[in-house]
Structure formats: C-alpha cells, structure tokens
Image 1 (cartoon, rainbow over the protein chains, first blue to last red):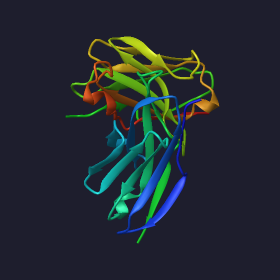
Image 2: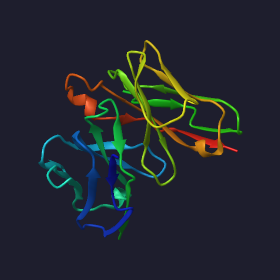
Image 3: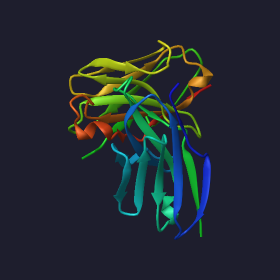
Length: 111
Length: 118
C-alpha cells in the first residue's frame, strides 16, 4: 500500500536546528509537500519538492531523494512558535486527484 | 482574501443522526477536498470535488457524501453517525491538478469543523 512514515515526536532547543524525516512506500508520486499545524489550527503549506534536491524558504528547507524514498524538513534557528505538528504529503500517480498525508511529527521546542 | 471558511466550527450529535458541514473555498480556487483528522493523526482524504463532480474518493463508506455548487462551495454530509466519526473535518481548496498548474499542489485549509458524536 501507500504510506508515509514520520517520527511521532521530536524535541529540540530554541535556536537549534532540527530535521524531521519522512520515508515513504509508494509506487510513484508527483512531489513531496510539507504542512505545519499548530494545536487547534488548520494545516498550512510550507514547501513542495517536485524534483530531488533541496528547496529553501527562509528558515525552512525541504529535501527529497526519490532513489532513497526519503525526504526531510529542516528547521533552522528554532523559535518557540515553531512548536507544532508537521506533516509530509504526496500526490500519487495512481490517484492524482488526492493528496495523502503522513501521520505527523509533533515538534516541541524547549527554551 | 478570506481564505477557506468552514461552518459550523463545533457541533455535537448523537449516534444515528445526520450532519452537514459547509465550506467556502479560497477566492480563485476551483477544487475542494475534504479530510477527516482524528486526534494526533494526519488528515485522511475523504473525497475531492471539481466542476460539481466527485473526482476521487478515499476509503470512506457511502455514509459520507458531498456536493459542490456552481460557486465552488461544498458540503460534506455524514449519515447514520457513529461514535468513530468524532473528529476534526477539514476542507481544503486548491486549483485542479490536471494541466500541471502550480497551485494544484498547494492546499489551503479551513480551520475545520469539530464533530463530537455521543
């Protein structure tokens, strides 16, 4: 089947760097996306990797390696407001109208 | 730009009842997808509507149905509610994916409707 695996929880220190991994088992997809969701809030789009490599958007970067079935979200200069859940997501070749999400990683930032 | 708006924000129903949730997409978007999110889990795809037709459906029973109107707004209906239907229901709008439009890969979510079934 199609699945996206993420660590359930990650803890990091304010000002540090953290990497949230996403490994997948899927026959093929158009690209890998990342979304952020604060408690009680709506998921918000962070980044999209259509091709292998690194995409940088301010303090956030996202990476994709299709050959390794692996991607990650890198958050630098962590701030307390980055405490949230992060989801990776893909649009599958087999059912292109839908985007499926991983189970999410809850990031906790310590002072 | 009001973004995606959903109503109601919270509602409580009892088993066996029916519920209708509503969504207005972001201005300029033509596609609406509905997701169910249980506590501590990722959003699960229910179905997607484009041009007033259901384009794709996730692994949800026929008790879940929907509709899209000419103004692109959408409704999600759930019949014969079960305790397990308690969740946050998220509406996401985008551009339709066909044709390689960039906006098709960016979902804009509403704040959701939290349904509690007793």
